Structure formats: structure tokens, C-alpha cells
Image (cartoon, rainbow, N blue to C red; front, side, top):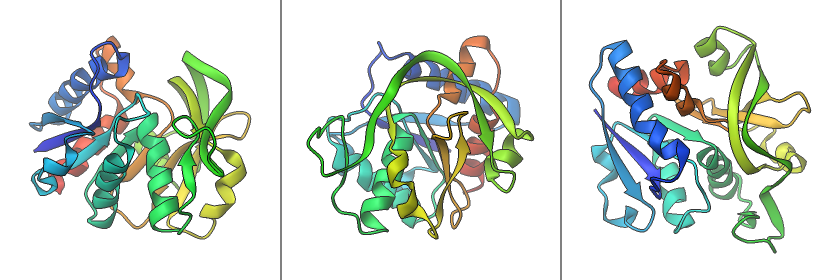
Length: 227
């Protein structure tokens, strides 16, 4: 089983140091073997996407080549390949769906394009720097099944997120936002028509620093091993 880590690796990014450890801890805990491959956004066109059992779109955006990252997300979505997006990966999963499935071609990332006419990804009113926060999950969601709990606490490190003003464009679509913070802002999404397609504004990979397996990472690897 090979998992593609989609983004731009930087050893100075905390999440990038955490992800390999999180994969190792989770794979050992569920009894599967998983290898990872970092997929720099500039090199994605040269990759054979069919060799991967799953894709994890990683934090630390804007990416060097956003459209290449969106192409991988589209590939995973359209081919039912297990997908996990955390932080920036979560944001771009929403962006890819809005553009390519819902037809909002002007949807954009306000961090890389401050003048965007439709900043689906926009600056948070208050940056979340290594802060823990409560997330309330829809009881009908896959995330609720994964956690076995309606309310969870997770850690963030982000200054941008999915703009709540545009959530209504997803109404009636297969993409649903299934986790919200205490202010009602979206913090997780799922794609109902896929076996496993989850995005979180928080960073479950950080559980690796305490040596504990995270249920989201475990469920993602389990889905990839069954793909």
C-alpha cells in the first residue's frame, strides 16, 4: 500500500514532521504495511497516480502549483480513491469540488489570490496557531462513526479556511460539511458518494507527537488498504 502525500514538503513545517510518524503509528496499530511518497506540487504531472492506494493532501498551502494539487484531488474524487485532506488539503478539497463539480470556476484561494471575486478560501477572523478547539460532528457523518463521539477536541494551525458565506453552494450536493466549531464555522467535510473522502481543518497528524494513533489516520489507512 502506497500513500501519496500531496503538497510541498518542508521539514520546518510541524505537520510535515508529524505525518510520517502518524502513518507509522496508525499502520502498526491496525496491522497493515503502508509506505509514503511525498508528491511535490511541481512534479505531480510526472507521477503515475494509479500506483497509489490513497492520497493525503497535506498542510502548508498555498502550494507551489495549486492546479496540479487540484488535479490529484479530482482524480481521487472521480475514481473513488481514498482521500484525506488536512488543513490546506481540506480547503482545496472544497475548492476542487466547487470548481469542477458545481461549476463555480471563479472560486479561488484568497491567500494566493487576494483579489479573487469568489474567495471560497479566505482569512479567518482570528488565526489558530497550535490551538485546540471543540468540533461538533453530525451524527449521520462518517466522522461520527470514526470517533464514536459527537464532540471532539482537535488542534489547529491555520490562518485561512472555507468561507462560511459560500456554504450554501454545496447544498444538495454530495459534499457535506459535517463538523463545526462553537461559532458555527465549518471544520470538516465529507463526500457522500465516495467510500472514503474526508477533509478536516484541524490536523489529526499531530497526535503522533504523543505517540498515539489517531482514529482518522487509522480509518484512512484501513480504507487505502482495502482499495
